Length: 181
Image (tube, rainbow, N blue to C red; front, side, top):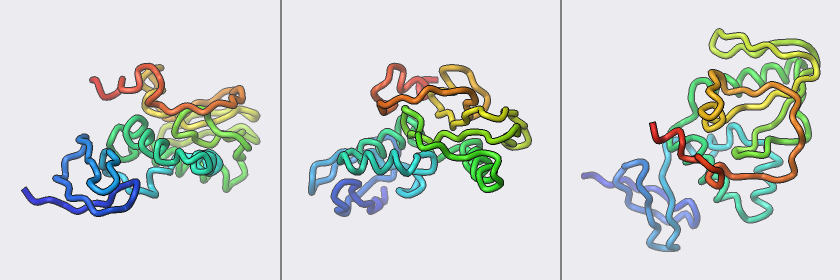
């Protein structure tokens, strides 16, 4: 078996890795244990609001958020085509002035931005139209939320209450639910 060289997510030291995802790797330099993932380091933040990320970084917990996103939210995989379609579509709607980002983010990891509809419209996800009304809040729905509520689309539309706490998915009941199928 040919070993690959990766970097420790904590200290950056080189580590020999067998290429198997889903198995923990321990850094011989700093002792950190992490799970290598398919998604690149920057792409992991695709759904995370920049303010939420900055808060975790300020609190010295950015590594915990990244681990939670990679293995509880993304489940050790890459973002799905629907997740990427949502990100592109919400960016398009914001650019066109149909929605605006609120100064808040979703309470649950990966802490996506919440958007407010400035007029009636629709999200177009892979040819499927999801309508919303002026004043609706729009937020990306993680795979665990989709599993739990049997949602077909990675989006929640409604009138959401602001919540001051932030939760990692790994700390919630049924966090591994989607992997158990």
